[in-house]
Image (cartoon, rainbow, N blue to C red):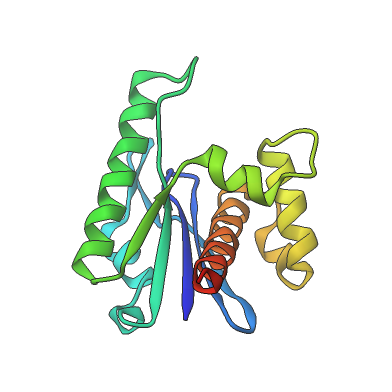
Length: 161
C-alpha cells in the first residue's frame, strides 16, 4: 500500500511513502504567469499517476484561514485544496482530510514548537537519505510527514479488533 501525503499550498509538496520508506517527494507543481505563480494542473495530475489507484491512500491537509493571512493567499490555498480534491477523485484515489493540528500532534509531539522548521527537522530525522532533496522546502517536508501520519493511522486502524 502506498501512502500519499499532500500539502496543498503553492509552496506545498507531494510525498509517496511505500513499504520500503519514502519513495519520492516533490514540490507542488506550479508555473509562472507573469509575476504570479499558478498551479500547474497537468503536472499535478502526473504527480499522482492513475496506476496508484487501488494501491494507494492519500492524506490531504485540510486548509483553513489563519490570522494575518491575506485574502489572496487564502483564496490561492483554497484553490489548491479544491484542485487536489478533484484530482484525487478523478484518479479514484481514496483520501482522508487531516487538519494540520492533528498530524502535527502525532508527528511533532515531542517538539516544543510545531512550526515549519520543526517539520523540516523531523523529516530530516526520519529520512536522512532525502534530506538534501528536501533542503529547506517545508512543503515537501510536511507532505512527507503527512504521508507518515497516514501510514501510522492506517496501521493503527488495521490493528483494531
